Length: 82
Image (tube, rainbow, N blue to C red):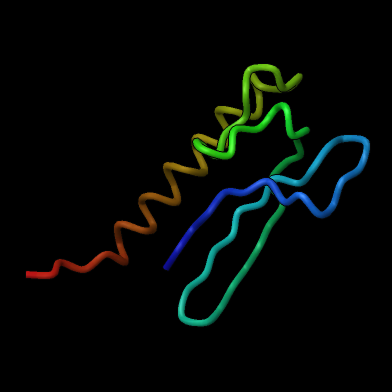
C-alpha cells in the first residue's frame, strides 16, 4: 500500500493546481482532491503548504491530520521481515 500527497500540475484554474492524495493497494488506485495551491505555495519535497499560501493557517492542520492518519493506516499494512 502506498499513500502520496502531490500537487497535480495538469489541472489549473484561478485557485491554482489541485493537491491530491493518491492511494494504491493491490492494483487498485484512488485519487482525491484535498485542496488547491499555486506552485509558489506548495513544497514538493515535504508535500506541504508553504506559509505564503493565503489559507495556510486552516489548511496545514488539516493536511497534517491526513498525513498522521495515512501513517497509521500504512503501519497496519507493514509486516516484519523477521
